Structure formats: structure tokens, C-alpha cells
Image 1 (tube, rainbow, N blue to C red):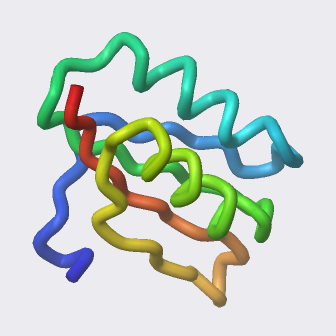
Image 2 (cartoon, one colour):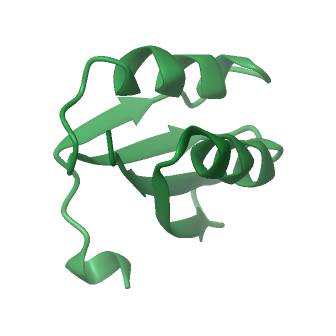
Length: 82
């Protein structure tokens, strides 16, 4: 699916530990318009679970989670809804 996802905003939180990547995402999402596609890049494995949980609670949509095994990070794609 990621081949068809073209993020409007990329947040590079690689190297940050929990809760850093989630806090980076929350801070950015608050300033974005509905319909914005965001890619969160993270090396923190817990983000692949924590971020989608927050996204659902906040009323946004998780589009995809991709593990880049060779490069040691995940991309979490979300779309803002409000």
C-alpha cells in the first residue's frame, strides 16, 4: 500500500525513544488541516503500537505501518481527520 501513499508531511523521529516519536507527532498534528497525510519515521519499536492507539483515540486514521528491516526503522502513515 505504501507505494500509493504520498505523505504531505514527514516527521523524522528516528533515534528518539518513547514517548518522543509520539510527542513529535502530537505536536505536529495539532497544526495540520484535516486530510493531511503524515509519515512518522521512528526507530522505537513501541511506536508501531503506541502511535496507532493514539491515532484511533484522537479520531484520526492509521493508513499503514511499514517496517524497514534493512534500515532499522518503521514508517507509520496517518491521515488527519480534524
